[in-house]
Length: 383
Image (tube, rainbow, N blue to C red; front, top):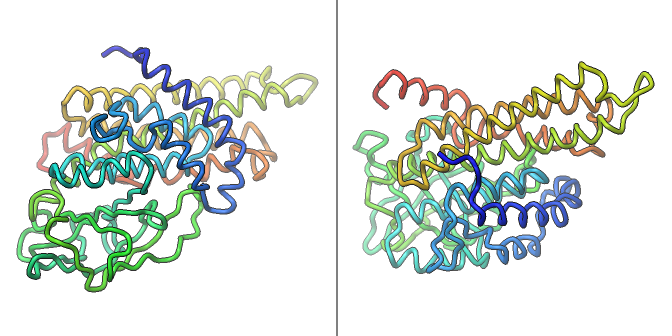
């Protein structure tokens, strides 16, 4: 594996880094407080190709793959975890699932407007009673003539408040083993019977909206079945495998942000007659933070490289996501310690970065689930 980014991705990195520093960083605190990212910012990101990272060029996207995705998400997260999460969920989950399971007509209908930023995408798997045990979902889809009727509920749906289309997992065969009777459906905003709940009041990632969904005799045409009937959970696992790369990259961005803010602050803050970065105790903390951030980036990019090479990255995605997410929380906590009392104030970015980081240990498979996946792979245990 070549650890040096190719020239096109270095150019992309520099472009997104400047955009994030100029247009996102100065507004991140306000967006966190208000719980919203302006539509104008989403349009600007779309103009840079950031809403169609994985979508092939012939369908209006950038087609730069998962290594490119990891670069983009890291740079956005450096300034605002919520903004990065919007892009990650839109690209990696919604567009990603359509790319994995969609037929030609579905890709042609949905991917161009998603890639152009004309609509936002959301992905609906989690339910009030099924989180880590995702296959225990209870939302149902019953065949009725030329369509399916959905009933049930979902929660923790990223982008749900403004999404134009939802990829929804539902049980289509109640008699089958729980992982083998699930299908995926494309549900458009405004479909009768789809209820979008109020935005959740979250600890972190506040710029990114999270809502519950309700389905009450929600009818979708049979053409909106995404993938094969009763095989939706297998596609879901593929989406999650790849989605963990994006959450890992988001974690790296948050950790890097905490490190860079700490390097700046420790050079300006003086105690005992000299900048605090001249004290060995602070130097050692900074050194450990830098090692962890760099190690996490390499693990995440290894998984991305495998995906772009057409190979599975189930083990590597879990390793990268586990290490990077736990790294981000620890590095952000260290950053607050370096900032002292100021790190506890909302005037300083490290407080927000820490709140954003914690979600990465929970979403798209908790740390406990990642350890289970890794152990099963090492011991060759059945999945």
